[in-house]
Length: 162
Image 1 (cartoon, rainbow, N blue to C red):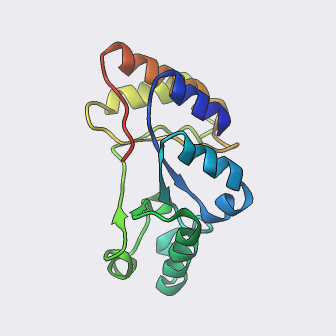
Image 2: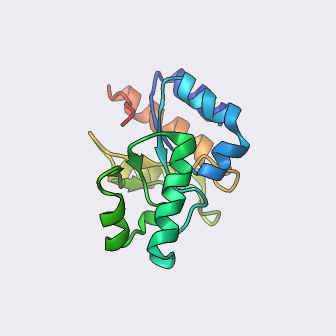
C-alpha cells in the first residue's frame, strides 16, 4: 500500500480503496495512511465473503462489522456477488459500487502488459477501474497502475476518488 500511495501521489491521483475489515483491523496504520493522503475508503466486507455463497444475515453482519472500522457509505461486494436479499438489507445504509473495468491484476497467468492493454481497451472518461492492492496482485498491479496513470495523464485525464 505505501508503494501504491507513492504512485498515486506522483500522478496527483486520488483513489477509493475498498477495504476488507479484518485487514483494517490488522493494519490500522496503513488504513490511516490511505485516509491521511486524501483518498476515500469503502467497505469490502469484514472477511471478503462472496454474497452468493453466504447467508444474508452473515453477509450483512460482516458488512456492518467492517463498517465499525471503515465508517463509509460505499460498499463494493467482493467479486461483485451480492444477492437481492442482501441488497434489500443494506440499501438504506450503503451505496453499492460496481466497476467499469477490472484489470485482472490478480491473475498470475497474465503479465503487466496484458493487464494494461485490457484496461486501456475497456476504459475511458468516467470509468471505475479495479486494481487489487494485495500481495497476490502486486507483480501485475504496480507496473500496470503506473502505466495506466501515465497513459491517461498524457491524454489530459485526472483521477478522482468516489
